[in-house]
Length: 402
Image 1 (tube, rainbow, N blue to C red):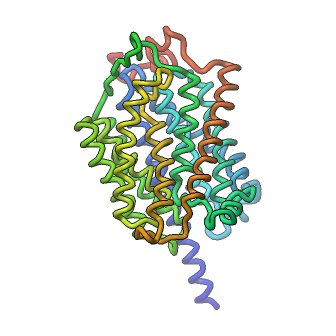
Image 2: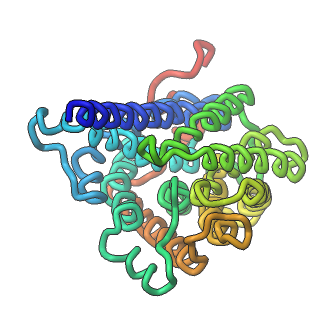
Image 3: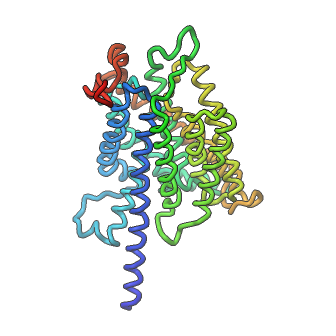
């Protein structure tokens, strides 16, 4: 009996440590979001980029702790600490891990609405998304809430499969961001006589640093989504690697060696492989990542040129929104046993589940940011935007020369 108890305690401790390491790796990814935005925006908006990511994370953690986690999983932490430490505090660390996923939503949105958004209105809007919109869909998919997954299984033979959040996290973030971007409108001077004016990234090394931090942390995002040691799979790690390099190579070719495209290429591939990284053959993952790299390059250029209100500074809608959609569909294709996958997935369930995610995210984004816009407005004044968010909001520039 003592040996059995010791083994059980050791297993609980190992699982707690495993998911804690995953939470820390995803926490580190937020530095990647920050530096990717810092390197992309103009110099006069770099401080604002850093501050947004940090404060969004703080607000997200509090609101997800008190509201969002309960909506998604029906669990709360309003009990004594002695109860919370059961199982080595595994449930607490699981919350930490899932909270870092939730906090990625405002970080994604931040890159789309950069350089012209008010500070507190956007902070409040992002907080409402993390408290209400995101956990509603998260619980629908990852906790089986409201019978949606059971209905898909009864109709199409399998539930919606999204192992690490191609849709639950990335597509939701990207489509919420699209709503906010359209409500904000384009930056002043972005278009002249109906033609887009190119705004070069301010700091390629910072952009590259952000991409690398995100890429490394993503292996915690994907592999640790197993949440316990007995569920860990080397297939997830290698599929993540193959999708990443597929995105790099295709973005390099189609993006004509542009450093912005090359450093977003691996991120596009990793977004897409999240859903089916536990099912696909590595060749399927490579193709999935390559297609995602192409989607990002082509759609980013098309959207900026053709849709004047869609001034998506970091390209978060194509990168997270559309590549996330592709990832769920790719899971339904390359997850099939006939294409080398493990099976147990339905393409129709993937399509319906993805559509549900897009509707919840885009509709929720329009409602939340529409209300905030009506109450307080979303945009800086023309003068504040011209002077830059750093000085206008934070009263300091990125360097002493500002």
